[in-house]
Image (cartoon, rainbow, N blue to C red):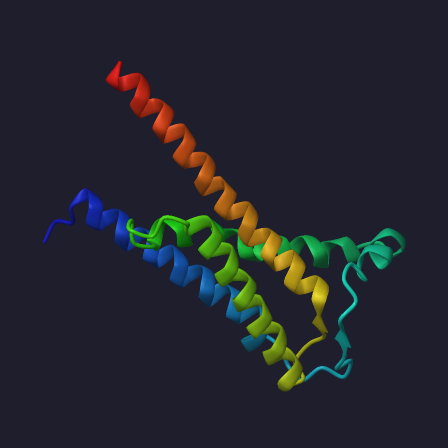
Length: 148
């Protein structure tokens, strides 16, 4: 059975969301072992100072952002078209997912539960979702030029 253009888009975007979720869970939960440094950091931007003083620490911050960008890119496309505020919903879903990941890491002692991780992960989803918003703006301009 040949997939139609609309159906192809739906399948690809849902696969993108699924792949993003699998990657996030593999790297943040399933790929870890019990951590000796079981800790909670609720101070926002506490990782900024170590990022300035320790070589390589910035990598953790950037990886938290990069890990969630694909979810931000794919989720708005996968949501039904009747949902108007897809970018906002995507960012909220990314924030909630990040909180769940951090809480899971804390409960099962498989990582440090940090406010900064939630902030950076949410920033990653926001950047991906913003790319979707830019895509919409460009698409509207192209359609407008084609109709002239």
